[in-house]
Amino acid sequence: MDSILAPKEHATILDEGLAAAPSTDGVPVLAAEYLVYMKLVAGRRQDLADIGALVLANRVDLARARSLARALEPSQQAELEKIISSADE
Image (cartoon, rainbow, N blue to C red; front, side):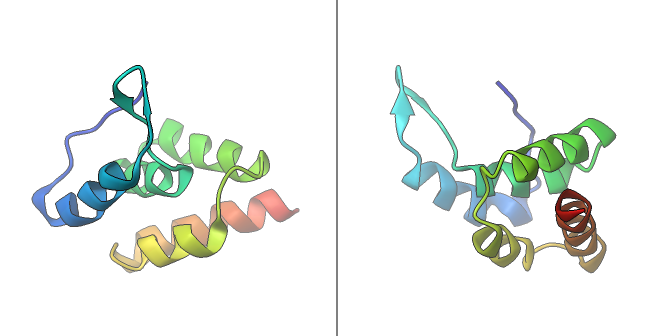
């Protein structure tokens, strides 16, 4: 399980993700694209490595992840592209 305290400016996107999330034993499970978004917001080394692992495992709809990332800072969008490029190598 992973969680972060999201700054208020991310609430709309995360609320959208939670609203669409299926529940397992009463616990909402975010789609991988929203998890990628959360991990980009957190930006820690392990979070970025986790994004890479999700991309390598082909668990992420890259178009949707990129769409969500447009709400982030350009540097965070660039980090996502860097991770995706590394996974393609």
